[in-house]
Length: 596
Ligand SMILES: Nc1nc2c(ncn2[C@@H]2O[C@H](COP(=O)(O)OP(=O)(O)OP(=O)(O)O)[C@@H](O)[C@H]2O)c(=O)[nH]1
Ligand SMILES: [Mg+2]
Image (cartoon, rainbow, N blue to C red; front, top):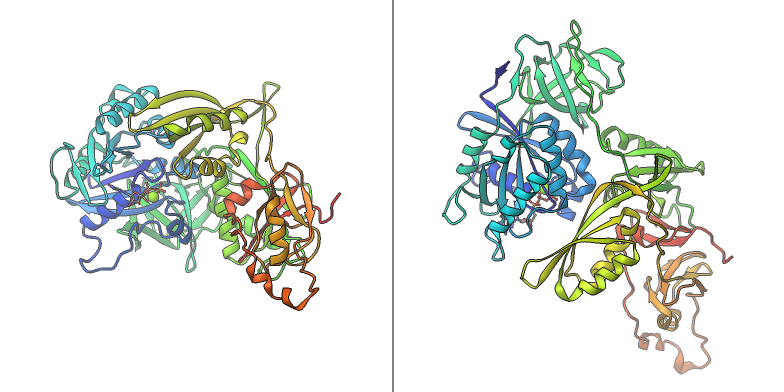
């Protein structure tokens, strides 16, 4: 075996929001990728619209910088648990990881998940304690908690000897001693060169390129990103495409790229050890190998965790369908989902019971919500059902996905939160008081029990609570969990909502619509304060019995309606309800348009 001393490949992994993308920004700036006066967006790697809006990374992305003559390929990964599949795959192209941990929050569920994957692959970590500028930082405790986590995950002696770097990613400062002063990321760059192994390869072996990510380019079509394990990629050269299912065919590479800063740069050749991308193969998929036609040697296929939650996507059948969307039919929806499957490996799509519907399975609600949000921006209309967990039969027993929920709250909310979770059949496994007036609780709870919990939790803790959850595996079914405690107010006819009617319905619960909004029979216009559903006339006008009363509607004070985000709407609805999604509106509705 030989080593590419001029290359390092690493992935940055962490729990959501611990600062990965911000650190990549600083690394890009300090390695001279941008001109001094260049206008560059903050968290430049978060380039998708939804990533910028939500402030989170959704897709893993590649970049490369040069430091002391060594090319450092960096993969920025998402920290949100729903996109854990992205992280898992990208670990197949690197030789080490930067594990970021927030200096205040410490290791959280996703830290455990991503670190577990990295250690299992034998990747050496560099521990980066980030956000050391936070006034409430607690560096030594966080360090202890991180060591505990490594031990808990059965790290080897070698893996436990990780170097530690302290950073303020926002200011672009890295230190080997948290109390020292610093100006730049040099200590981090130097540690990367010394602690992350150079990629090794077999100079005698034929081409082996493992596909770990797919991108799309309007110019060249599908672009497959991965690591050149052995051999050389050459533009125009004939290669063997070895599919993960065992079939193979010859193909020719129309383009070969490597990374330089934020760009994918065209190359004649790319050599073993580097992270590269190829174009020209429209049927290439994640887990496939490109090999030498004279000596094809497939690499082990990549495994991705199975989906745990599913939701039915169907045609928008509401009376208001087709008003503002461009893509309405089940064929449109099917084609769009098929396209998504090409890039989104952790997703599954199957025909649902109804011919016009598809069951889409994913790793979590946010992953599904992101897909729906993307589709509506592209001009789709659809209706979606309440998310359901995917159960499995294990040894003849019905099992369901379980999660570890980590909750940070002010002490005063312990009672209410514990009660909410126990009615959802959660079991408290840990309680730590950090002494800042906040406590951290850990619960073991079914994924089913967590559906709809997040919004309730935020309301009850007045927005001060932080909830993180991580799938921990399958366990026997935990029993019935009561659904939404409240019934809904359902419009019994088509028309427009009217101030007068809303005013008189307000005392019954919480209204979801503004005056003047179109409504239809079966549309949910509010929440009942009691448990049953009531069908109401929200279009009722005041009878104009005398002149003075006319127009006095303005005097009726309305409480602002409750508005739902897509995720909140998905979590809110019951089994016999749907969310109607169009490019410009979200409406909740009953599946039936008549009271039964
Ligand atoms: N005070 C402080 N804030 C930081 C630091 N690094 C990052 N942040 C902030 O933390 C927030 C999250 O940063 P991101 O870089 O998006 O975190 P991330 O790990 O990429 O998040 P995901 O990709 O969604 O998992 C942003 O508001 C950053 O400005 C730091 O060193 N100090
Ligand atoms: Mg990020």
